[in-house]
Image 1 (tube, rainbow, N blue to C red):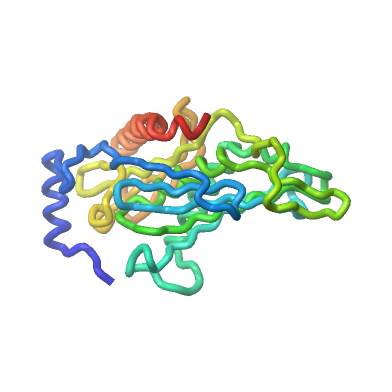
Image 2: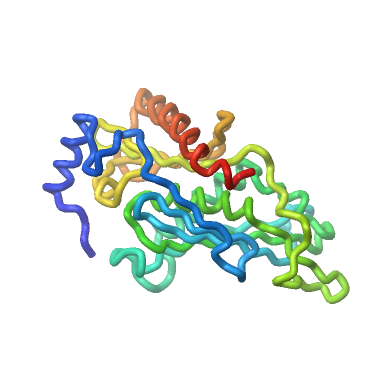
Length: 267
């Protein structure tokens, strides 16, 4: 498993202290975002997201099941992430490890807390049958910032998702046949932005080398309208109150830029 050397890490910190990055970007600059939709004919919604060389696939599947006991009149939501060994020698086959679990949780929290999916509209029969929404995230290539790529993929895949037909007589989903309805979504869109602290510098959209030397990160789910839905800190370095203000300001500015890159898919 290759990790960034201490010498390279020191050079990254030195560059950042001068307002520069190895790839020529500014500290607040994202790499190019490209999106390809409808990549799977087995999913109700699917996308491929690339941020620079980082690449993820996200698929949405729907099924009918019993509601959770604490929400008998609402649809179910489950988000899972799988970091595939083909995307990095750092990832291994076997049960999901913390980085994989964390990505799923971060995406789940932003979508759930924003109420982006109108789960109350996915109830078929209260206490008995509701639509279950499964969001599956797969890494294809890891060159840093899988978290934000997964978040973008999830919201775009949901926007593409159509409700399949449900055969009430036989109580089963007719996969491959769709209604003219899309999954009900709210207008306020949760976009995840992760701000990384490296030395005294704050950056967005880190490369893998930059991620290796980050000392703290804040993953923030929010909307371009200014709402905040979720905040989670990663890594052990402390963050000052002043830095937190700067992080929130940087994430808000970056969120608007990211939204402008994906806006055509969100209509």
